[in-house]
Amino acid sequence: MRKKIVARNLALTAGFFAAAALGYGRGIDTVVEVPTTRDSALVEVPTAATPQPIDDSTSNLSLGRESKNVVDEKAVVEQEKTPSWIWSTDIGYDSEYIFRGTNLTPGSKGIGYFDASVTKLGVFQSNDSLTFGVTGIHQFGRATVDSWSLGESGGNTTGSIAGAPVSGGGTVTYLRLPQTVQTRFNEVDLFLSYRFSVGPIDVTIGDIGFIIDRDATTFETDVLPVGFRWLIPPTGNRIRVVGPDPTVEDEQFDRAYIRLSTTKLCKFITPQITYYQTLLSQGSQPTGKGLTQFYPPDVNGRIPQNPRPFDERNPEDYGGYLEGKIVGRFPVTHWMDIDPYGLVSVSFRDRTEPGGANPFAGHPLTGWNHAQAGVKIPIRVMHFQSSGVNVFVAPFGDYAYHIANPPPGTDRDEWSGGGEIQVTF
Image 1 (cartoon, rainbow, N blue to C red):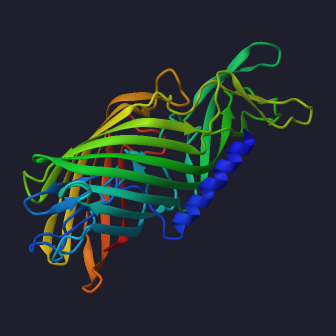
Image 2 (cartoon, rainbow, N blue to C red; image 1 turned 180 degrees about the horizontal axis):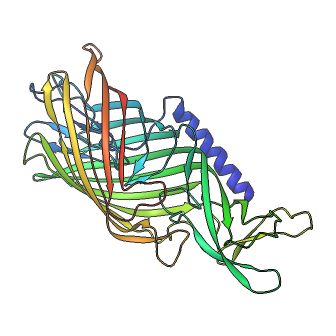
């Protein structure tokens, strides 16, 4: 088993650094755009798992992928004829990694991300497209959360209580306060999607694979009531620190999705609705009821025991996730657009929230998850007529409101922002 884990981690590390040779990234509704009207410097074309619709009347084409943070609508200048292939890449920085309303890097110095994708237009018919892409994400600094683990699928408690034996007989209730430090977080996503039109509706079917390489350590502070002191280990007072505890580290996910959107209602606004279905959810974690973690013996040879009675990750029942979204594109000049967006999401056991029978992982959430809004301003800074290469600088800002109870490390109101450099050709 250990050999398999080592081999998997080596392969993951090699894959990540291969992506890192081009830059860092995160899967954020990546979109490449192809121009079609003289009114705007930007029109969208797809790049990944979060597609945007094709408008037959204007030849507008767009595609994208699962939103992890901002709506990453990329700008592409108008061309005299629509190309058969669209290539796009970007590299950027975000102050937080908000994925489906959950902060995956709380207290860190932000993330660097990289996206690259290629779209083939007119695969089987004139108005369809096929997109393949890769995203990479890298955490800067350390992330810290007052919980037994840090991740999108578990670690939903900031403390619990337990009973400790008292010298002379009996037990006393004490408070357990965990803290997890995430020293390394790298993510690589691979996505594939196909888009086609059915009347005024654009349909996109796709799949996204997520590979997370995480190094995290959990320590626990145990606090006794006034008048008691720890004998194992003999701290001489009410407080002891134990650890490291086992915690959630490497994870793998796979999610298929289907999206419906249209550009027929308004040329500046695209409504879309997407349903994601989890097909794979795995991760290294402490498992099994009655699990006990041992610590070094004290001077008298006595070994403290730290019971961990529950699995920490969201139960692997492969839930679903529904997201409604409105994407805007408003040309300001021939070289700049303002691209706002808004979304709201519902979890069908795909997310977790604190509480329930499992105090370590929380409980699967069925109901409203979060709402989010933001704006990106792509500004074209270079255009090479001969090669068709366009370079954009795009600052962005986002606000997320957690409708369900936010997990530790995530605020009810989350603000984030950053910028990226986009290249399309």
